[in-house]
Length: 293
Image (cartoon, rainbow, N blue to C red):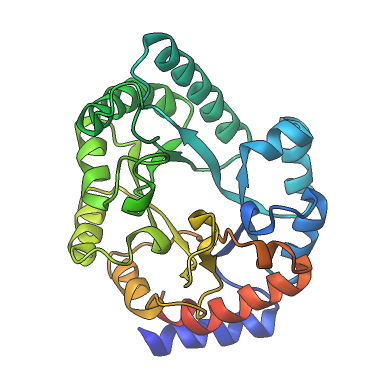
């Protein structure tokens, strides 16, 4: 597998492209959208992961035109979710907002909407109840996603984010909800930053693939010391503690052939000129990820 992938990487380098690499917009959070798109294409990268803030800033139709004019595809839209509120009015508002997010995903031609499901509601501090509310909401949203030709990628996040961002901490927890939805349009995104620590990771990845629910793969490193805002402790592949060849082999063994998004939240990365950051990402990807994919 390694030899074949390495040959593919060499062929791609000669052609000036970087196979399957997608740059997530939030890796370039402080860079204007057009500059981000230009930095992407300048490195021979053919896909981007977009955020709903881009839709709000640029406009849905205008953003789609810019992506199409750049010759790029959209690998995902981030983010839907935040479905854990206990108050009925808040839950209804969240469902409406997620339907809009599904519409935006479809309009951008993206296959999947990444779902950050939400943290514990301070009103009741009931994490079990919060997960149950996520299950109910995903089950309600799934038929609409199916109608629009969009999948919902549930994102388990590191346990330190359970309070404010995601009451799902493992792939298995996310798969339980995906399966409970009864919809083939619901699956999981494997983000190395959030799941690298899980001793059940390989088995969970296999479980996701067996039910055709492995929908997306995102990569970045786990850096220390943690930033004052822990969410911003993501780093370039190779700067931290994650074994990218090992995890990528797990993903590849399932037959996954989708785009691989690099999603980094890091203030130093945001301060780096976009073309330089894109160069570093492409080089690290070709060294640490692509040969094993």
